[in-house]
Image 1 (cartoon, rainbow, N blue to C red):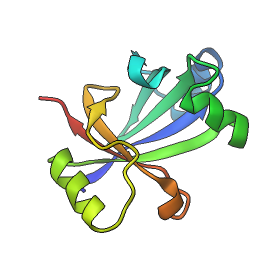
Image 2 (image 1 turned 120 degrees about the vertical axis):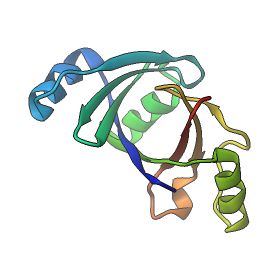
Image 3 (image 1 turned 90 degrees about the vertical axis):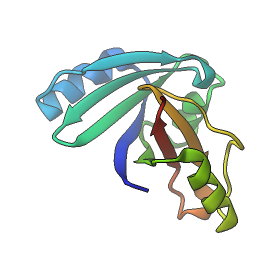
Image 4 (image 1 turned 90 degrees about the horizontal axis):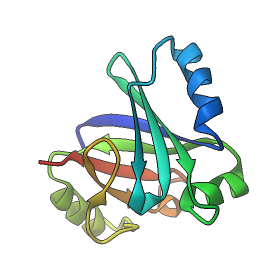
Amino acid sequence: MQQIEHIGIAVKSLAQSVPLFEKLLNTPCYKTEFVENEKVNTAFFKTGDNKIELLESTDPDGVIARFIEKKGEGMHHIAFAVADIEAEMKRLKKEGFVLLNEAPKNGADNKLVCFLHPKHINGVLIELCMERK
């Protein structure tokens, strides 16, 4: 793993949360995007080398909607940049980590992604992400 790529925060409403984070971070949202396979709208902020991704569910039965229903709004995941997502997935599986998807899938911000089950990582959902070529 190279570095923290972004921190994902589950929110009920981007319309309410984007202005809040623009004020908090003193920077505008630089990108919004719909991720069809995850059924989420996303909004990205950059401050220094750090990125924050806000995630709003577009489906009441979606992963983010269920997360908010169970835990409320808040930190959803930490994403790490990787040079070779398939090699990293293979390494982590060999180390005994549980992957939530067996193959990389399309994510936001032109990334291929894979999530690791939080049950085996002290309750923290980890996302691996690699720039799509």
